[in-house]
Image: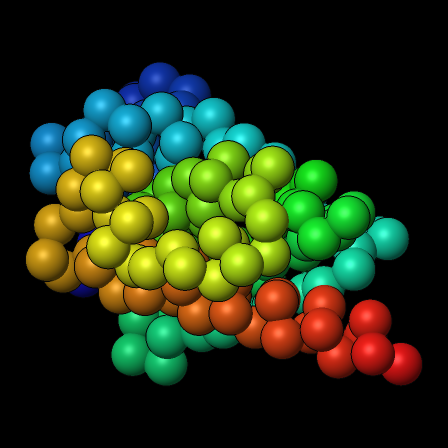
Length: 148
């Protein structure tokens, strides 16, 4: 069971804050920064490609949006529901994709995402695997849409 906040704790010191402090020590500073201040979060209404993936074991879900011009990703954003590592992996993925050719974007692996984050604990590597999955699915969606 999750620890419950005790009476009299200050604002922001609830269950979420307690859990974050317990897990924070296992994350790199890069992961912590992307979790606290995610880059490019939000839906993209005019996306050229969208990819969805989820982990049925932990329940993390990711959705990646890409905007493409001249075979380059010019914009990327995400919606993610999950742990701090999943949010950080999504945020980092959007940063990594911006400006890449479609071919270079297709070469990004889960290890690339984990390395860019300064590493992930073994129990959180599935977050970088999800990131790789949404990249593939967004690129597939883009290619399907552009052929129509």
